[in-house]
Picture 1 (cartoon, helix red, strand yellow):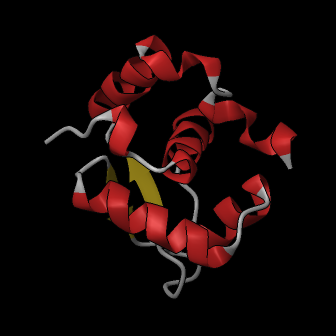
Picture 2 (picture 1 turned 90 degrees about the vertical axis):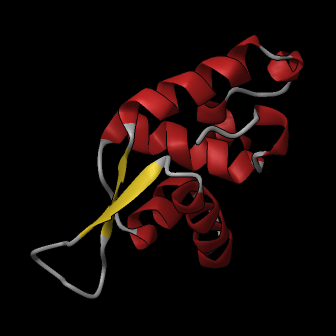
Length: 100
């Protein structure tokens, strides 16, 4: 299942780009890295999980904080759609950090 870039929250695109670049992370790490509210991260992760763009994997060092791993093929397609779309005038998914 794929989702359209126009219907994907910008926070989800930023999270997807970060996980794509830096590998699996727990929600707290994502929140700190992107300077996003934990509630925003949770909402975006649920959206991405529901669209099968992420997979939840156990964190063996702390079972209370699962890590999220990107479905690389689906993420490449979505990030490519985002970059090719009319939203190109908006900041890239990786620019979230500089914005804050």
